[in-house]
Length: 261
Length: 194
Image (cartoon, rainbow over all chains, first blue to last red; front, side, top):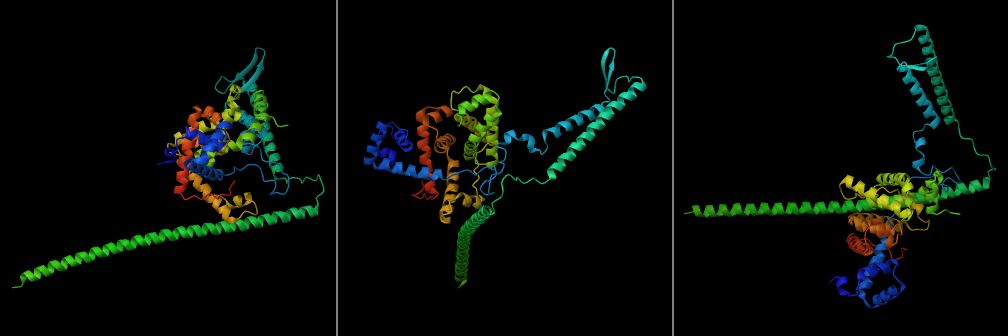
């Protein structure tokens, strides 16, 4: 018989859940508490559910990698960007202005490949591409020179920008010389870091040893089980063989006795 | 003075990116925790978390405040998790963290916590993760939202779209299954926890 069947309290499940999570009406809670005092089944369920909730409380997801650990680094540091959502521009390693310059260069190269020519005439702005009838040679040569020069300029500008970016990236970060460093405080912090690291290493070592022992025991149990099974198989095979031999001997004995005069 | 979710939402709708960033900072971990506990994979949980905020950002102009902002986020997360599970076409695969870094655990633990307690806590967490994965989806969702996110019964009922009594029934049934499964796994919960 389940606890549910042992108790006739009205809407027992809901009352138990309300009681467990503290969301019941005060009057109803008092009534249920009185019932708990008299009903071992409900008391057992309430206790068991509290134990389950305690177990659930110990389950935490792994921490996602986010900002730097300020305490471990011994001081305030610039936190990592709060979310990748707003940091996509930096994820590829190239700042926005470099990407814009690269896009402009690509457009310029594309225009050059399409042999685009833009001319200004009394009738207005003329745009010609490579497959249209070319203008007079003198004019065409001048226009080609203009946009080719522009593309070359863009290319040079982009190269300069990239070189500047590389140079800035390789330059070591200047030390913030805001306040003078207190050596004693620094020494204290370093000692604290070392002590914390030593404690962590000891804990890690103990946990690793625990893991190894657990694995060894599991392996030992598995090996023993396999040995048991193997011995069992050997025993049954041996038994079968003995039985076969006996049957052969019996049939031989019968044959011999039947052949005797 | 800390702004409420509603104030931050209103500012975000008016175009204040910092306000939305503040909302992300505030709710990123609970959303990630819900996603991880639902689908059991770190990488996918991070993807679900990011996708939740992306969808929330896009749908923010349509958010009228009928429910709490957090409940709205939870609903988006649960829908994304459900879509993920449908795509996977299998029960949620729970990655038992066999290689969970003991250094992290040791760092998170109080210096005076005994190693035996640390190991026991880790082993129990693994067992809990396994048995939670065996629960039916609706029971698991109810327990996750109640135990780890502190929603009231009514909020859970509104979020999943079912009556209050159904939520209580799911919680009761879920806890009953967990009780049985934890006993089967031989899980021992120290009496002095919490």
